[in-house]
Length: 345
Ligand SMILES: Nc1nc2c(ncn2[C@@H]2O[C@H](COP(=O)(O)OP(=O)(O)OP(=O)(O)O)[C@@H](O)[C@H]2O)c(=O)[nH]1
Ligand SMILES: [Zn+2]
View 1 (cartoon, rainbow, N blue to C red):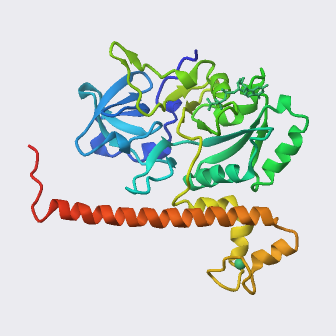
View 2: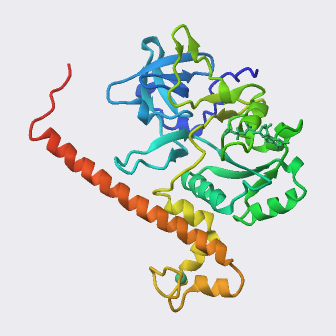
View 3: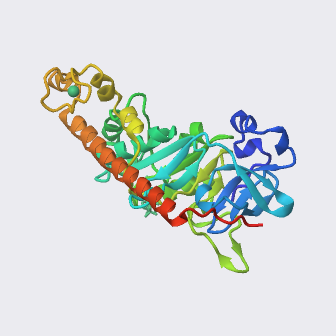
């Protein structure tokens, strides 16, 4: 078991958070969210673990593991969630338009797959789009390198999925795992793992945390039993940083990540500006710079097809969500009618 580093800096607190404090906040205590439950959250202050209830107007749906917050420890109340440096959310619920927060203030996302039939460029690009959109550094982790004859060729294929993309080919059960991950896991760094079932996420999480991260929550057992609702939690790593467990990250629908898709396919999105038509679909339009690059062998037809598929899924989902939000807004107005809601005293 790893002892949690102490002090606010050790929690990953940086100038970005510090700059959000005003003179009125002097009496409040900064903390980082370790668990989110239906009606309360668990926060670490660097010296204490606090169980907090929320101020009226805040719901736990608006708080993510990894969030930095200000709280009033004497009252056990969370007062304010600070702006996030990065925010990873799960594909939005189409019928309500609500986003489900997965993790806040992540520095790196380890997109995990194996050197075998699990390796799937389309799935990796989906995760890459999500990471890029969230502003989180993606790192492709290829496990089971010890069982593959051609781990290097998987690594080459992975590198081809982006510019300057970090790729680690590892044996998740190897004794040198922590060393491989060290550049991303040091003090102040926060990371999470994504990938399909069986690729080795739990094995890696346990190695990085020196324990049972994926199945244990920080101080989550008490006399009333276990209370985890999201199953997500923040764990100290051997190298000094933090790991957020993200059990909801196996399969993901994409919505509202147009920026992330463009960033995942920079060679295509940059060329699109040179197409004759601004809304070019890169099919058979005259003057299509992307098709010209495919003909010249600079972009593979497969990669272009995957780009178009993600774009189209994203566009459809984004439109569906916009409609749902619009509907909710209108329903909200009708439900409230002309009456002013009574103020609680
Ligand atoms: N030889 C070898 N075995 C591995 C490696 N990575 C994972 N395994 C094994 O693969 C199996 C699945 O690993 P897990 O860590 O449970 O995979 P997971 O991604 O957490 O799976 P879920 O919990 O279902 O999401 C286990 O038996 C691991 O020991 C690796 O790099 N090399
Ligand atoms: Zn075009």
